[in-house]
Length: 192
Image 1: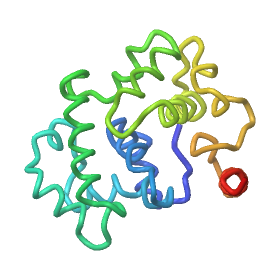
Image 2 (image 1 turned 90 degrees about the vertical axis):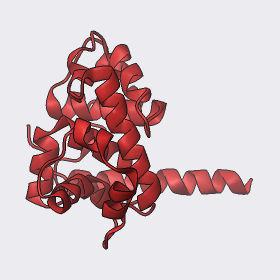
Image 3 (image 1 turned 60 degrees about the horizontal axis):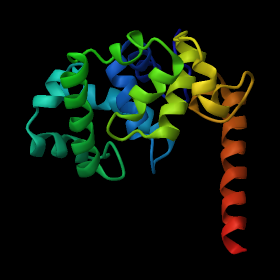
């Protein structure tokens, strides 16, 4: 299935065909708008002149990668830190999955194992692992037994909680409304 996020078609196509680009986008999806996070793997490919592999990024000169991330417009709000984290992610994929990002999920026997594998990736953690599990299940058909349970509430059918649920403009608006409600509730809770 092809993603339909509110980004350029070329960026959606890259995320749809490249497991490494998809994991990189999920890792970058923090403290920036989702459009920025999910467009950045494509922008990185444009800057490099080709679609990078995990092995290439793992072996990249750290200062050179940081400079590429920092070129204007920067690929993230924190380009140097995220370049380092991208390299850490790539090295983990090389060391644990022979550089084949898809093996993170293709070798997972259960949803719990999938979420655990994702949660161990640099820049992930439990929450992001659940969202990624939901994204893989809902939009890519990666559905090992127990995947919905492993995805937590993000795995619920018909939910509009995260990027896993964005398929068009209406679902994007619903996800944004949910996130706005969550931020308001958290802010209200801090005041008490």
